[in-house]
Length: 190
Image 1 (cartoon, one colour):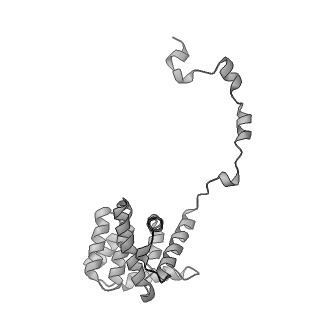
Image 2 (cartoon, one colour):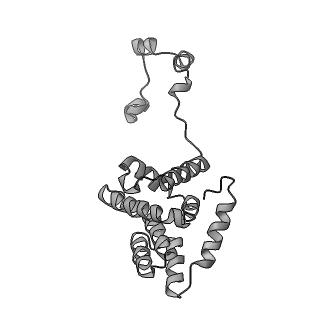
Image 3 (spheres, rainbow, N blue to C red):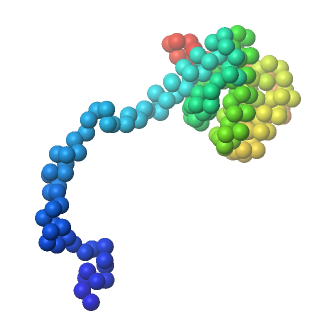
C-alpha cells in the first residue's frame, strides 16, 4: 500500500488541479489587508477605561439607570470581570453617586440573570454589597455577598466583604483605599 493510500489527507494535487491552483505569491497579493477590514482589539487598559467611563456617564446622568438597554448592561458587566475595573467602580460612593450606582448594580444583576449572563455577575453582586455596606445596610450587604459567593465561592472581593461583615468592621478602612485609588486618576472619576 502506498503512502497516499494510508494517509488520504496527504494526497497531492495532480494534473489540472495543480495547474488551476493559485501560486502562494499570487494568493498573498489578492489578500492584501485593508485598514477597514481589520478588527481592532482594544487593550485591557482601554477596555477598563471604557467600562469606567460608561459607568461614570450612567451614574452621573440624571436618568434612571434601570432604563438602560441590555447591550449597555452587558458591556458594563463584561468590563467588570476585570478586577481593577471592579475595584475602581467601587469608588462611586459619594452621596451624589451612591443611589444611582446601587440602582445600576441591581438593574444589571436582574438583566443578566434573565438573559443568561448569571455567571458574570459576581462583580455586580459584590458592588451591590459594597453599596449596601457603605449605606449602612449590613443585612442587604450580606445578602448580596452571599449571592456573589454562591456563583463564585473563590471571588476574592466578595470574600473580603464577607469577612468585614462577619467581623463587624466598618467600611471606613476599605473606603479610604478605594478613594485613594480614585484620586490616582487625573479625571478624579474612579
